[in-house]
Length: 203
View 1: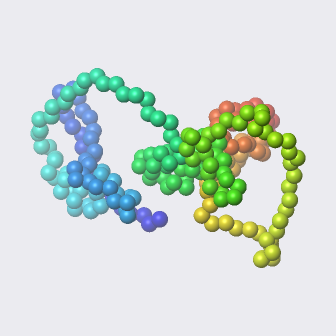
View 2 (view 1 turned 30 degrees about the horizontal axis):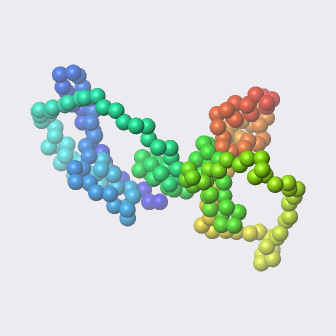
């Protein structure tokens, strides 16, 4: 990530009903996937911003506004792809960070054990198991160390698992430490936080 300076032009308009503010946007703006930092309201040269201000400063104009009632259907629920797209468009979040925040705070995300990719990425994959679908099993754990390094550690790359969920959850656990909370399951919903506080003992 490289920080870049940009400018915005915000004007205060006087009208019969009072004052309101508006932000300048480029009328010919086109999205460029090669530069996701571009926005219609961002001006990258100070001279361009000053020129826009000079052209608009104290200039009277006639504005016509019409309003009429309308109705629209409720939007469809987000799946993972549409959520990532919306978060990137509104807030500039990367797909990885959106997945991590959703997993840590809002939704249960399951992964394919063979590929490491999310298997609940869209609504059709949310299966509801019933009793006949649950086989008898015995839980256990087998430790298999990697023979190719002294620590026996294993690593993966480009997997569906991301680092932001543990960062968020660790922050929540730190905040709940005065209540004696040492663990909380994801997603960290307000209800779970409240129950953890009630069960814990304030230090």
